[in-house]
Length: 112
Length: 114
Image (cartoon, rainbow over all chains, first blue to last red):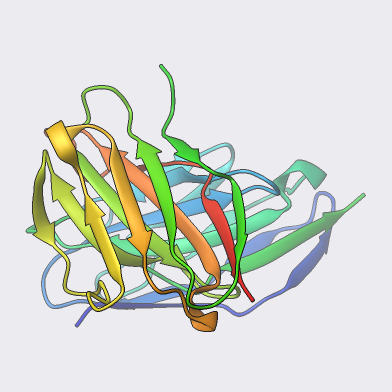
């Protein structure tokens, strides 16, 4: 079956630091890959997505590249801000049913 | 565009009681999902509707959980009787028929079973 494994947290960074959250997946077909973010007190929001190998998703300074050869979709941001403090979830969906399978989430705290 | 609405936001009940959650998806969204998010874990799909029909309920504990989506719009999720391990956040999400991959989530209902 499908599964997503992401880096355990919590992760604590200083402002302007570089952020990487690792995500690897197992899927039977050719899934689409997503990063969702959950800010404190808010619902899950789609951050970015990639639908095929070598695609790069980007939004709000975050980027992730779909790497089929390493079955990975690592999230990166070059210079984080306090407002990036949130829980980040990696997820995948198969093209035949669009159900999302989530990782456990990584809590990121950015200190001023 | 209004987002996915859920109510109540919080609920505390005792074990063996029943509880119901309500979800109103984004207008025009054909697909509706209910997820369970236990503390420290990622959301897990419970049930998926396409219009008013069930597409997948393989992960729904049918001995105690039920869900319906009458008229293909609003949906309710019920737990009867509740167990301690049902304490979680229940998330509702919806997506368009043509762009099914992007799911939009509501704020969730936080359930505590004592």
